[in-house]
Image 1 (spheres, rainbow, N blue to C red):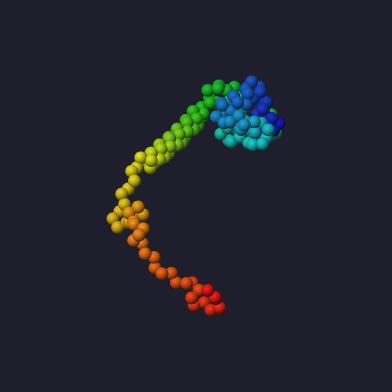
Image 2: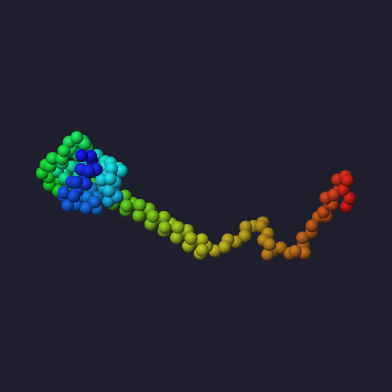
Length: 154
């Protein structure tokens, strides 16, 4: 019997859905589905947890030549590694949420300060267009561009 067949059989024997097994292992239901279809292989940590949960040695799960033989197991022993894994994911989620919140706050502060900011006074020595009188502007004489070009008649 192959690994995927063993996993599906053990899950059904223990009257568990894929979602319930996924929750017990702290993985997605899709991961369990992929394992049972043979598309993916569970990690060693997940194999050990399933062995404890179903009362089966890991060797029997992974060796296609070995038949399944059950051993008694308590559900508490099967779930021992889960609090650490779950705690790490919760901590990571909290850190990511905090980063997003700080980023959003910084963006709001930047936008508000740009809106509220008063226009700066012009620096000394800068002439603004409003201050200039157009009558004072004298343009130099523009030389005809055809000067010096031979063969061109103006």
